[in-house]
Length: 148
Image (cartoon, rainbow, N blue to C red; front, side, top):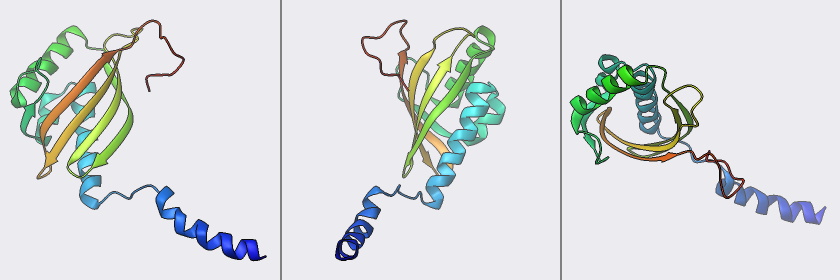
């Protein structure tokens, strides 16, 4: 009985360290904005529907043009060359104005695809900046870990 009385308060005190941090209402809104944008842009390839979420859209990928028009060009390229491309979001993380996605993107059915990390900065309920890192999924791996 004494062990339970002593152990219970210690366990209760440690619980916040293991609890998942709750998102603020604005963080939840930022997450919703980015997820809706991602579906409309990358999967539906619908610039008009996706553009309502864009602010300046500063692009930090050196291979991509800045601004909403840069995104329009990329979506037109996808629509023309990879109409069946799909991006499956595997994980979403939010930290203040930043929404981070882990994505499995496949350009053509049957391809292994790419592992992508997309980082968006949201301000005034608009996506203002975007960073990404794209890693092709290799045929073989030197370890048994998955990329997701």
